[in-house]
Length: 533
Ligand code: BG6
Image 1: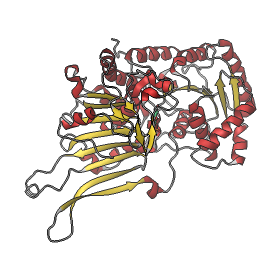
Image 2 (image 1 turned 30 degrees about the vertical axis):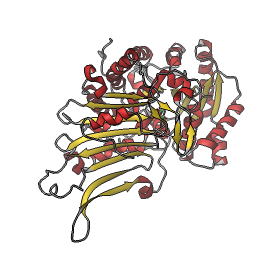
Image 3 (image 1 turned 180 degrees about the horizontal axis):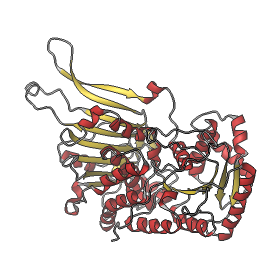
Image 4 (image 1 turned 135 degrees about the vertical axis):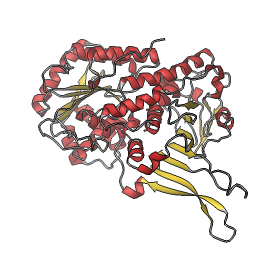
């Protein structure tokens, strides 16, 4: 098996450019002393006719335009195989934005202006001539829109095209050498999954490094762009009271849940290749876990934060393969009911093998072998077609010594701090109080903070924050290569074990339930239960 002997990538240094656009504040970088200014640029989206472009990327760009957060000299070019004119592309994107933008209705005046900066370029991803014509097309747009040669290339295609596109960008002279004296920059955003196991992750990493410096690569994990995920850092390190008990002296265990009501919808072909371990746990959940468990970084610069996250993933105790089932559970949904609606099982979904062994649910118990977390179990579960959409981190604190209250029938519960990532974003703390009255029983109550009611605004979509950060050259909220590979290193033995031992009981949970019984047994073996959400 390949190992992780690759150098720590160099630090991205942002030069202070001339002021040309709107000043933009990254709350995590506010105290870092660096003022970043948004520069003119063109964003080129590869896979412009795909689902992600319509649902997320164009609505994000439109909302950034609406809020005045795009550079004043800006253009976006959709790159895809299908032939179409700029006008056709604009019209399709208009419909997409009207349907998927978080702010509705679409503002015609803003759209009119924004759409003039939208262009389309048709070519095959593996055709070098298509990149030569793209180069000329972009230079022409530079003249027309004043975008000064700066480029963001967004790879939103199936992962198998990534090497081809990167190679063609490199050979086509569209990637600038970072060491050459030039004011122009080029950056590449790569959608997940970055590889499909450790070996392929390493080869993709080596391949990209042949054409790009680490500071030019932005591996997107949109969970890092969510306000509530960013707030984990602020919550932990801007409040002295929490940090004091954020360790194995006080924490009993941590549960991280990612639940979705939806099934795999039209993404059968993708899911058959991926499964939930690759789709959610290797990236989104590992990112959340590392933010919850990391040590305070020495500063808020991207590499300090990413160094600390990396240490967490590298401290994960390798799985005990001889007791595998005590640590790992997998599941696949069968037919069932979600929100009172009858839904089909995974094996009946379009583009799914009727005998598929791909998992749509996984539960894990893991340990972080460092001083802070020694002995504290972290339980992770992720599933499609669960009863509700809910992503949260729940930190359960140890019980009080059973001297005072245990003599009565036990009504008090452990304190639990919950960081609700979505929906109903917020933070709650469960604590025990005396019920008024002479018999003074104890009752757990909840202190609850809700973003929506407190701040009264819809937070920006993760993609808005992340695209903007990439234009600014701020990689804090993107995954670094060594983080991604460390995560693959931990996850790959599970994939290998699953491949060696196909499941005999799939489907093993009904759509609309909280996963297979084995997931409950995983916690029951430790005298614990999953939280009821
Ligand atoms: C994507 C996964 O990365 O995240 C999907 O590929 C999942 O399977 C989605 O549904 C969830 O994102 P969000 O932002 O809706 O929680």
